[in-house]
Length: 219
Ligand code: AP5
Ligand code: MG
Image 1 (cartoon, rainbow, N blue to C red):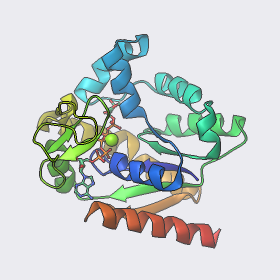
Image 2: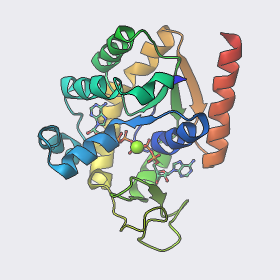
Image 3: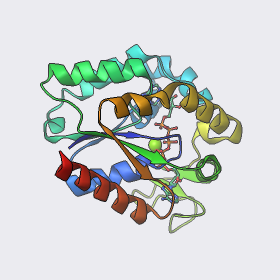
Image 4: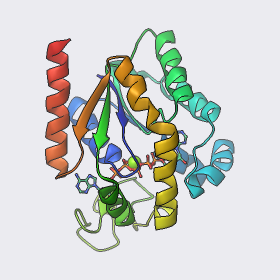
């Protein structure tokens, strides 16, 4: 299974990507998580990226594609992968296609999670994350067992710098301008699968699995 998760900020790409990864035994590759880790480590890529990520702008395409080329060369991706947060622009989609073609593969599907803007804003402004192990919580729908502490690794939770209301609005605008055109791009290539992203985490996961299964049977 080689899929891309498309969807606005807060649509559940990370949450659903993690479930798909566990269920199918394939890696979830999140450009957002990778960039945050590079920034925390102060690497040359992190230093270049931090000014973009902090304010909710996109990191330049060439830096993202270089990072993906290296990641997709790793052996664990041979059995498949779930891409969370890439591509985010038409040049990234084309670059990704080239990277995959050079290793003799192509995408199976692009899953678009569909949600109302109001739900996205509510989800992002109530999200808390574990900077240590990248676990994601939501103070309203999925709080940790002990307030402020990660269930998984015991580390302290924090809010993402880009989850302030003003930056969330900016990220949603960037998504509409630069990333949403990928919906038509993948539709034209027969890869688009649209899934209702509202409702419970388990409900959305079941809809994704059903849609992918129907697609497999059709093709
Ligand atoms: P990234 O980290 O990818 O952020 P994003 O796309 O804005 O998406 P989010 O991580 O905010 O949301 P999500 O869809 O993963 O939702 P989640 O599952 O957490 O990118 C961050 C930045 O990095 C970008 O702004 C950019 O600067 C840079 N970047 C990254 N990739 C790039 C690229 N390719 N090119 C250029 N720049 C790039 O869920 C959200 C919340 O909702 C959580 O609290 C969760 O618990 C909750 N939730 C999830 N599902 C449900 C549900 N069904 N019901 C109730 N609550 C739910
Ligand atoms: Mg995410």
